[in-house]
Length: 77
Image (cartoon, rainbow, N blue to C red; front, side, top):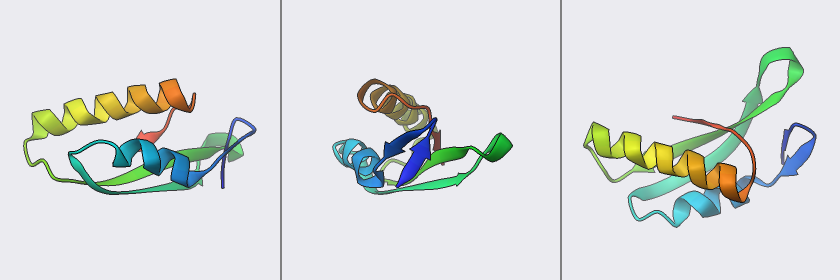
C-alpha cells in the first residue's frame, strides 16, 4: 500500500495502468520517503522502446493517465 496525501493507493492499480501500454514490458510501483515525512509513488518501468524521444513521450502519457485515473502525481524512472 502506498499512502499519498492521506489516500491509500494500491501499487497494482498503478501497474495496471502502465501494463496497458504496449511499449512497456514490466512495471513495478513502490513508495519512497518524500519531503517532510510524505510518501512518493514511484514507477519503475522496463520499456521496449530505445528511442529517447519516444520514451519521454511515453512518460508524459503515463503521468497524464495516472493523474487522470488515480489523481496523484508520481515519480517515474
